[in-house]
Length: 216
Image (tube, rainbow, N blue to C red):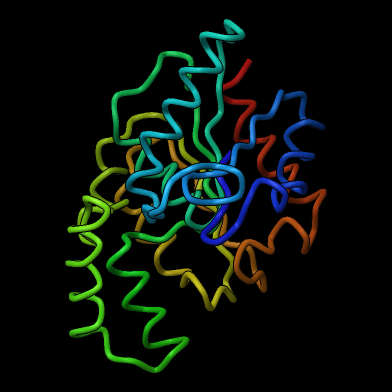
């Protein structure tokens, strides 16, 4: 499982507990440059996508598991969506992503205006250039839409209809660009990643119903 921007594994208790109740063993690492993990640069999902797949590979090597579900929230969900477009381990059976954004460029531009009332240009462009020089990627590279188009594994997208941090439209856009099998759950009245706390049992039922089709 992957946490969100400025988060850490300690904030993932509700989701980790849900998967445990569904019978899964759960790995919740701190993402790069977060919590106890090393690194100086957060990758808005783009750098983390390969970290996520490397964690999956480590789990396979250490446990010989045959079935893995990749899951995340917010930036972690975007990173998992980006990971879905990479070459997959045969053990990875499905993705569940809660409140993912479409790209680093889109979400930073949106939040600059929505939260800080700042124009996206030239702020985002300059920041992206600095990020390219310091961290090796640009905001436009961190593109979950392009990645989900390359994914052919089952993916469930969860978005709250009152999410003012990552707009619901981004979840809808990712769903439109995904291949089948896919599922979009728009949670009425839920804010950013709050669908699980709005109604925990309902959330668990929806996730379980999706995964039981692909995980034995």
